[in-house]
Length: 138
Image (cartoon, rainbow, N blue to C red):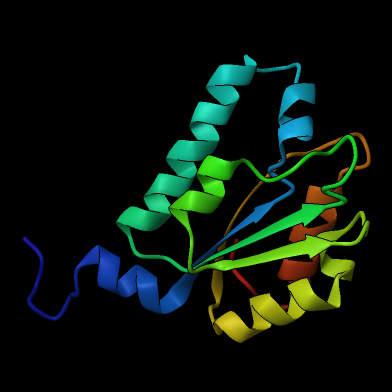
């Protein structure tokens, strides 16, 4: 049994955690070949729903949404109408975007849950490495 000193998980998480979704875009989702596309998108939406359940702030970042990468799924945007969405202007590494870095910094959170699509150029890994060097938990 938990002691009365512990807060509910949703309250504790809301104070320390933010969820970041990097390059979850329609065109990139359709390029995923190691998962069933519908299952992959369903998993993304479930991840997004967990952020809602725990009342976590969410930062969504997309790269070059005009073009083959496509837009952030409308249902994902609808789930987070008051959260931050950063449309990067082509930076491969989300961490290279000043607006994105500022949004992460402004969250004031020390624990980051990162979701993203990893492509051959591995922009997802670049950003995770930046978080590690900045002393964030991921």
